[in-house]
Length: 104
Image (tube, rainbow, N blue to C red; front, top):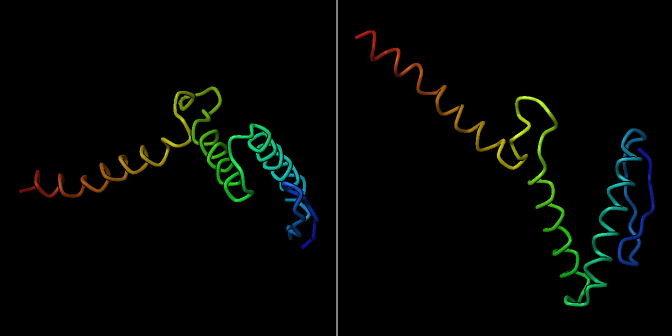
């Protein structure tokens, strides 16, 4: 494990990660810092905790609204995948019951 030192909203943090994760983690920290700085500069919210929460909500909404690239799932938002998977699992769970009913 490697240790990297980062700064978000002027506060320093020490994070541990594998060498393979370092670039992604550094990019994520940069993204979070940019978002928190943008929220802070908007001037409508004060306090680092509130700024961090608002930035986290914005990032989560962005992530959940992302669409898969071209292909059969290109029209599905990432946040909708769980709902669709749960629906399919429910349908699959009903198959044995339907088979038992038709065998009678």
